[in-house]
Image (cartoon, rainbow, N blue to C red; front, side, top):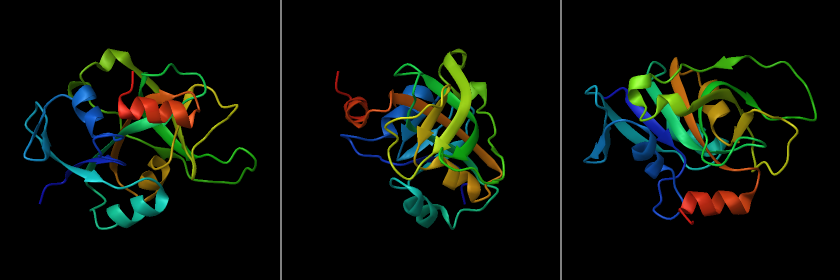
Length: 179
């Protein structure tokens, strides 16, 4: 059984993240699998958006699986199109504070990336809904990564592409490839 997985939320042709794999990772798609230039073969898993879909879809994966999560994220101040290698993930709950474990991610190997020199390194905050405003700077917001990390995968990396500056309309335009 293959133990390498690229995890995305949406694969659709109109709005989806599958196109990000070819734009940002080395290799090519053959027979529905991503073949890295180092010879590893990665199965593509589409979870659906949000926590319940992530938990339902990934619950049977071995915790020692090699996982790369790639997807869109919002940011209050990073430019649209910025590429972010996520170093740590947290839940987004700006109104309350409570103790949570630190969820650190593995860095993505430079040889997996088309342009490693272009990557920012940042925290990702996961939310249960689309984030439309935040005082948090120098970070990205998504709806899945903290839940993936909390499942206990030991080899989890994430690459986020900034699709918007906290605008659902802008996200939909960028995700759909509208110029």
